[in-house]
Length: 367
Ligand code: GDD
Ligand code: MG
Image (cartoon, rainbow, N blue to C red; front, side, top):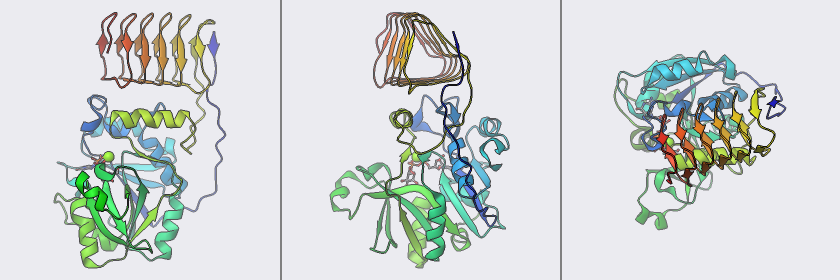
């Protein structure tokens, strides 16, 4: 049986004020080591998220706030990123690419990529998924006449992030990258750097040209030392996640399927082949050309294009990248499977498994 379009959502085009004086830089040059093996052949900025290159969400977030031009700051596998994103028009953005000769660190990369003619910049870490309304951050930035505004989000465990302490009016007082576990009980808050900054030229001028430097270790402390107006914007109820490790990457998909991420997905009609006796729930997402044989089942999962489930294969709470095959009777639970992989018949791929591209799991295996 051939099925048509799977996910239908209405997308409302809201009239937005175009901010020509603001230019965006997305930091997308990290190696994505914590997301290995998924990032061996696919750089982190374009790993598929709900079957789209991850950066699609960031470019659309910028254009929704009226920021139409974005520079992608690249270092690792730049050609793959350029090929996947193109000119950005698909995401309502005008994209250009700047590749560093060698990694310059977060602020060094920003300095290298920044359009010198701009006065105000928005900088994004290229691995954060959020439904924040950036227009509100810009509004606060202007109202407070800030030199720098950093978005904060409250987390349970700040040790994997940059901890930010502020005064009651939201002025940044201290920045502490990756605080040690023993320091956590003494911290004044659990608010961390969400990887979104609005910066004025006064901050760009603090960053040395063509030198390695980091916002987190060098430039934020320098802003504080110079006494510039450094403000914070606390993301209240919004969604936020760094997708930079496999657990978080899978959770982001589960959050999308559960409707927790307030972002629209495009209406892309797909043709898939589902046997009458196969079972598919309403929340799962399928790419073009998936094939589900009789008595197979897909529950709460995202299948990339061309994925095939043979008879009685089951996929649950998982993400399967394109062109993988799950052989008869195999079960995949709570896992991420890379592109063009093969899961042998009657295998059991249990919760937490992460397989890179072209993995081959022999018949009857248990992971
Ligand atoms: N172009 C370029 N060059 N990009 C880089 C470089 C570089 O040398 N180094 C890192 N990046 C990019 C990464 O690709 C990523 O998108 C972003 O900068 C942040 O790097 P991560 O390696 O993901 O940092 P993190 O997750 O450990 O910590 C950062 O993000 C947290 C929020 O997720 C810090 O900014 C923390 O303070 C923050 O809390
Ligand atoms: Mg990160």
